[in-house]
Image 1 (cartoon, rainbow, N blue to C red):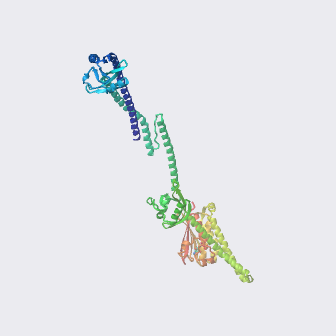
Image 2 (cartoon, rainbow, N blue to C red):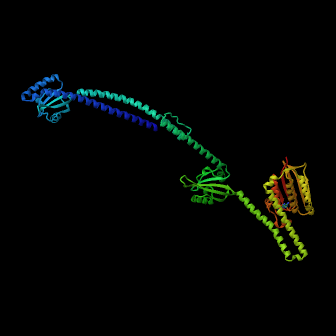
Length: 593
Ligand code: ADP
């Protein structure tokens, strides 16, 4: 369309140029031809007039001469085909070679006659209605010595000149027509030749515009159009490279966004959700239909909305902690909000990155709780020790019996503190990644470890007159464990059973192999644990009956150490208990290969 427009304009310009040139040239030639022929005719007539004047001026001297002039002219008319008229100086026609002078009007006012009398020569072209042709008149004055006696006028028809002119005009028109046809054909060819490369470039440019940047212009004209083609090719190549770079960059960003742990949400400056990554969609249940909705509708948190508004108005990034309840699960997020800007530097929106710090917060809370509990547990015996020491110093030392009692209590409390500190250190050691990595797991004969523990604790259970039995199943069960750790587990469990089983009760430690696992149970007929307490007994510092257990010296750390060790070894621990009837702890450990 564009290049056909150029082609039409080119053709029109060519035609206009050729037409105008031909027209101007033809008109000039025609004009020149006409003028030249007229001049030549006029020249001939002037010569004839001069010859006639020389010959005829004596006839103007008197009326008699004038009368014979008439006859003379008539004779002349038979040999000369030009009309000769003699007019006296008053304009009266004296004689005429073609007409009867008596019928002719006064010629004083005829331009050629007037000019001849005033300027010495006159000429005019006039149409003769009698003959129906144009005539050229040339007039000069007739002189007799210094006196002007009249005017002699010679006239000739212009028909020959005009006929020649018409012929030439016809030829010229024909030539004009032929040249025009040739010019049209040539213009079309030329215009086509000039516009074809342009058309090719336009087509390729159009395809490039539609995204086909691998298209190239192939034009070999050796002029500016070829340069234009090369430039377009270079432009497309560098544009293609740039687009590839941008696409690669975009893919990289998308990959990062999609595979990062954090949920990312992009909001516009009004707080409406415009884009989310996969994690955000999954975490907040955002469907594509929800894009465009306000964050209050999607996330439903006024603190976030407030932070978004502040980020937009202040144009500065910020962090906020956000406590949410997602599908009934409490989550804590640290949200990073950064403002985004339009190319004109206007606030465009806010980028929100949600960092899930629920676990971190939990650890922090647990640590704080642990420190509080540990301080409390250590503080209680310390207060007792301090109290009894002060009482002793205040005078009780004087009473030997009281002194022994108080010092015994001080020693017991110090023992308790010692045990507590030992257990805390053990827990800390177990928690250490280093120690867990260094521990050697090897085939451990569970029954042998159990037997060692039972005999180790003999003084305690024997003192309480308890019946402790060891039941080992058939075959030697080898667990993939560490003997020291397993000893610690069984010592803690058996120690509890001894503590919480009244004298005369029975404790059974059994070892067996079940479904690819080593299974160890410690069963007692002791006080049992109320069902409501069962879920908490593995928690640190948890004791069922604090007042009563205090006497037994428990710290509430034993079972948490047991659970920690069993799970570190890749096993499980379960408890079954009925208040007043007894308790059974069941441990499973993976078998040694
Ligand atoms: P502690 O060192 O105080 O014994 P544990 O973590 O070992 O702490 O035990 C936590 C609580 O579980 C105890 O205070 C006790 O109330 C209860 N418990 C543990 N084992 C038994 C058991 N065999 N019989 C009854 N209660 C038990």
